Length: 420
Image 1 (cartoon, helix red, strand yellow):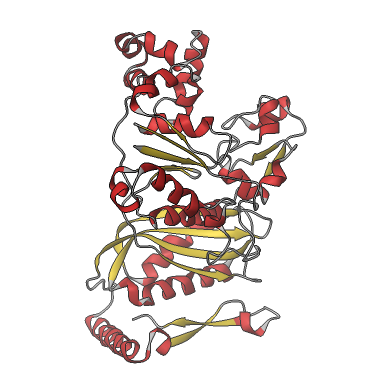
Image 2 (cartoon, rainbow, N blue to C red):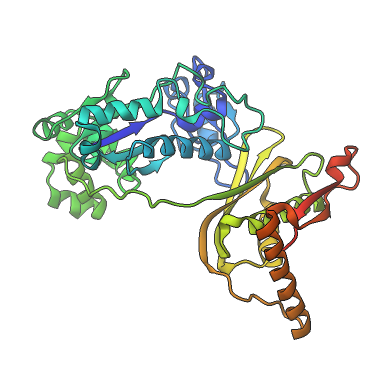
C-alpha cells in the first residue's frame, strides 16, 4: 500500500509566516526576479477570485486587484521540507518526494517493523506531528525565526494522509481528507472511488497537467468519464500523456522510486554590512574554505553545490551549480560561484553553501604554475592535513579581510581554514 503525505500550500504557508496569515487574505507567491512573471502557490481567497498557480501576473491582478504578493522563501522551504522528510525516514519510510509539501512511501517494507498498515500510518502521523512539529524552525541558518516556533504556524496546519494501491490513488485520497484521519482505499474500491473524482487531479503530475484545459473543453469532468474514452482514442489525440492519464484513471501507476540517501554538507554565514559587491565575494570564499576543510568531506571532490541567500528585504534565493568536472581547488570553485552572485535579486542578510553531490576523491589539481611552486604547495597541504589530524579542524587558520569599512570590528576580518 502506498501512502501520500500532503501539506496544502506548503511553500505559501512558510513564506507568509504561518497558516493563520492566509485566512481571509488573497495571497500569492511573487514570481522570481528575472524569470517569467507567473505566480507560485496561491491562497484559498485568491482561488475564489479565479487566481491559479502558474497564472500570469497581469491576468491575476486583473482578476483580483487586492492580490498581495509574498516573496518566495526557497531556502526556508527546502530546509523545512528536508526536516519533514527526515522525520518520515526516521520511522523507516523510503520516501519519494514529488514536490515540497507532497511525498509518498510504501508501507509493505514497514509492516513487519510496525505490525500493520494502520500502525505505519499512526507512526507517520506522529513523525510529522499534529502541528507541523517535524518542520519546526530548529535547522541551522533559519535566521529571523524563533527556535521554538513551528514553521507551519502552530496547531492550525495538519498533514493530510491518504493510502491506496497506487501513488495516484493515495494522492486522490489525501486530497479528499478534511481531518487528521487518513483515508485508506483498498484495491477493490479504489477504481470505483476514483471514477467520481475530478480530472483536476491530473494537474499534480507534470506529464498530464497540460491535458486539463483540452479535456475540460471536451466536457470531461471526472476520471470515470476520462476512463470511458478509451486508451487508444486518448493516445491518438494526446500521445503518451493521454495513455498515462488513462492509466491513472484506471487506478494503474508506475512503482515508487524512493530517493537515494544523500550526504549533505552545508556552511552558512551572516553577511552583515557585506551584503553585496566585493565584500560578499570574500564571504563566499570563506564558505568555500570551510567546506573544503571539513573532515567529513574525506578528500572527495565537489560535483554539484547549492548557493543560497536570505535577503534583507525578506524571502530567500537559491541557485544550484553543477561543475563541468569534479573540483577541489578553492580558486576554481570560488570563480565559478562568484559569477552566480550576480544573480542575487537583492542585498543578502546571510549566505549559505551546501554540497548536493560529491565526486571521486581528489587527485592533484595543479594550477598552471611551475613545478617548484606546485611541490611546495603539495608539502604545505600535507603539513596542514597532519596538523588538523592532531589538533582538529580549527588548528590551521588564516585571516581574511571581509569588510574593512564595517563599524563592527568582528566583521572586518574573520578566520577561515587554511587551504589544505
